Each structure stands twice: as structure tokens, then as C-alpha cells.
Image 1 (cartoon, rainbow, N blue to C red):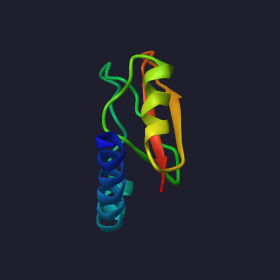
Image 2: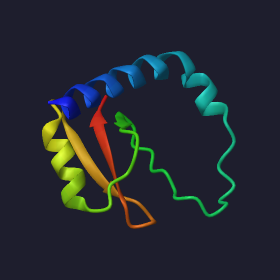
Image 3: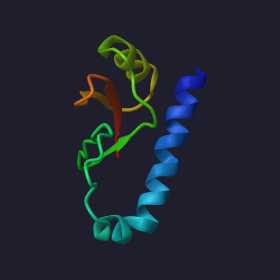
Length: 85
């Protein structure tokens, strides 16, 4: 239950943030590729903070959310959870 509330709060906060800083985010320079894990941008989806070591762990949190979700494998082998905007 705590995970569901946290995911819903994070998604709602991200929606509110995106509405105010969308123009700034589009004008930001591309990352320099300093060895950090790449972040996949999926239009219409909000990334949930943090990553998961396995697909099963990512799916478990996705199933606990009350939203449409998906898990995406990153270049570093970890998984990122996204919820529908």
C-alpha cells in the first residue's frame, strides 16, 4: 500500500513539475556521456525515481501501482519503472 501511494504521489508531482518546466527541459544540452547510466525518455511516460536490479523486482512495484506501467532495461543492466502520464 505504501508503494502504491508513493508511486501515485511521485507521478502526480512529476506531472505538476513537467507542466512548469517543459520548455526548460527541451532547451537543456544533451548529456556528455561521462559513463553514467543512460536515461531512456519515453514520451507520455513518467520515470519513477530509482532503478531495480531485476525485471521481477521492477514488475512487482509496477503491479503494486494503481497505474499503467512498464519496465525498461537500461544500458547498465538495471531496470527503470515508468508510469503512464
